[in-house]
Length: 143
Length: 433
Image (cartoon, rainbow over all chains, first blue to last red; front, top):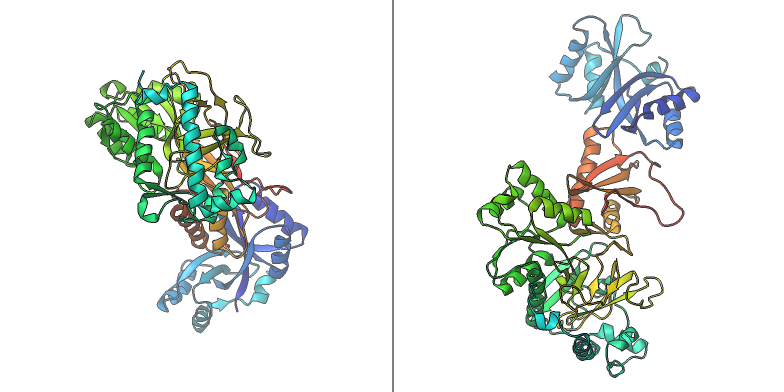
């Protein structure tokens, strides 16, 4: 139930992000979610795509430093409190969240959230026990 | 005119040559009999001490390089019993290993003598307060100037480097007359003085002896203006003795070499041919009074030229031009010798491949800065900002502990550092001397 997220190292120079999206576009890769962690000198671009393996290959061929990381994708009720219920469960079981970002999928009434935790298997188990919808990788790639 | 030793400093050339001849003959005998390295080298080219009758035979002798000292690390080229060595100093080697030098009691005495001449040239006397802001320790700067100043009978303030606030306070309260430090640090102090609202008229500064790194005429003018002093250039290297090998006089038209202790030559760095006076080439020194580590024709890698004309100051000692560059890739950053290959060694330890890197040296607010750009590799990458910052921090810490300088480390994208088919351009030096 773990989703492959792509992480790309980017220098803080203009045009880098445009370059990445151009390459993905040329290779028919669809981005469904993204987030950027930034510092003064560099940023880490995180992507959820429809074909992580192809993305990895294509970016490496173009001299980008890339990695895949396993993350969880959950769908929560798109109403106030929806997210907090899911996070409450993770904190109850002392599962730490490294980072997260939200995106809109084609699922109705649900807000979709990508979470990286320090214990993904445990997180999936606990969330499913509490009836929080954890999306399968296949579903995520088809978004 | 401020001479420390006018007999030598203004000696007629023929007499000086006679002294050099005698001392060279003695030195060649000493190294031949006591230093296997030199004996082997000389035997290989079929030279014996008896073949050297004077300085005109200097070119028959083999050269010595930093690599030779590295190969014999640490004491392989010392010419005396180790029990006679009373001082050890060391400086940067091309990679990891330091260049080690040793002094006998008499060497320390010679060193104090040549350094006294340097300081006297700047106007130091027994009433002077000398603030030594060169680093004390294995580096020859601090202790070198110290013993020279003490020889004169000046009052030495051995403050060493760093702690700028303290430096300013002492300069003002202790009544410093002579300042000894790197020229860039002196400029930095000048700036800090101004910021602290201390006027140069409130100080008792008369002169400064600045060296350990190259500096320009415009920097000199700035220093003299802002501090209200005479600023003279001094030259030295630990292999030859330390500071004190040569120094400017108030005429500021070249640095007088202490020729009764060190014989200079200028050679073509590629053909090794000795060049006539006035030609620009690589400076080579032969020590003729040192006992601990006498060196024959040591290649300094510094580019200069020699002028044998008598100076307006009255000194007959040959003058060398201010050093304008090097024949190798060594950098001097905040007075510290840095070889790009040292940085490469540090980077090699970090990952499993040798990463491409670029050194950017600049001078910001009168202080040298070093930025090391390293290309990101899969083994250095992590999905965490913290992880990448840790890598930068680790490299910084290693550079600091290995080289003693604080560098900024910036990880850059792969293939962004220029590749070349020949020697890789590893350094961009934005400083202007």
